[in-house]
Image 1 (cartoon, rainbow, N blue to C red):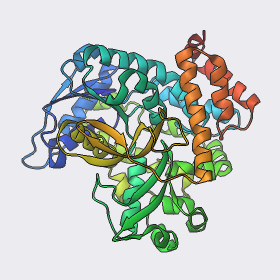
Image 2: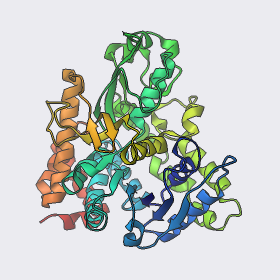
Image 3: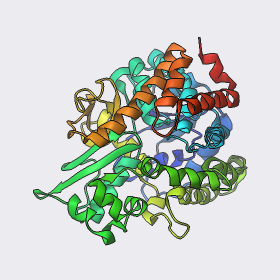
Image 4: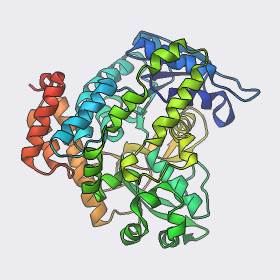
Length: 448
């Protein structure tokens, strides 16, 4: 089986390759082919992957690098897509334009996420057309952010053969189940009630042995303090909420604090990554030990993740710093789609009738059953009015940004910004879009 990774120069790609070499995903792929718009990046990442220490008896798949997209896709059974139009410099502009207008400067949430989507959707639709032309039977697993928006934009082209993944929701369930004293086997969501959109969801029950463990967990400050989300939101807020929110809801529930923290920082998250990784890829191409260089950069990168939600004294859990969520979700999906090994995972999937208050063709992030027949959303518990209200408002903004690109309609782009709950007025929305059009001149070419 051949796995093609489009965006193969992505920083976390070595984690995928390592997972395929031994353990639960050994022998899942015979070949891994990397393709990147910048061939030097995929070449650098290939050097890291081949330099990674592996356990005795590991059977690594053949690793290849292709500069031409059609060559990378040739013969591929599964395609992972993780591209970043505009690169790290684009991320910095997404953040800085929002901050200039007094808004939250974040990569996937709020104004920055909408800008990122406006740039990514056109490139992803071109890629989807090429996959449909050359490998129509391949499964496409989308990592490209904002994952929910991009996956929804791809579904009219690729239909049921595309699924979006993010490790944030799965990580929350794993951490909460450990803290509650009943760790869940990966790929088994028995008793889990999680509902939401990408980077906007809630864990609402953890049933085990006939009872729900979540109320006791929410009432126990010590256990809440043992994992990331419990510390980010605090026991009093979580007790009031009656659910465990995805970590990205920090930007909604503590919007003012997040905005002030991000605006006051000497550098944005994007600028921090640019600084940390300045010259990294050339070093990976020339270093005698590229894995050591990469691993040091990876640890530094993980330590700064969602830093605005933590105090200066707090640090991320060692288990989170070690990695393992991103590739585990993706490869479990891949294994279930290509083998007779069903699983249940939280993924970005077509809603259908799982949440009847949202459109059937909307992409939601909820538990789904993954089999060789495809990915099917599982029935979801009814959202509370608060949850539904926030989901509906964000989903309306997401659908407008997709329609703006597909139809070349600038009015819909303005409306997408104006309707988003993290943007404070219609006037701000118009200034934001003008700011992004100035920062990214290609956006103005979208409008008819």
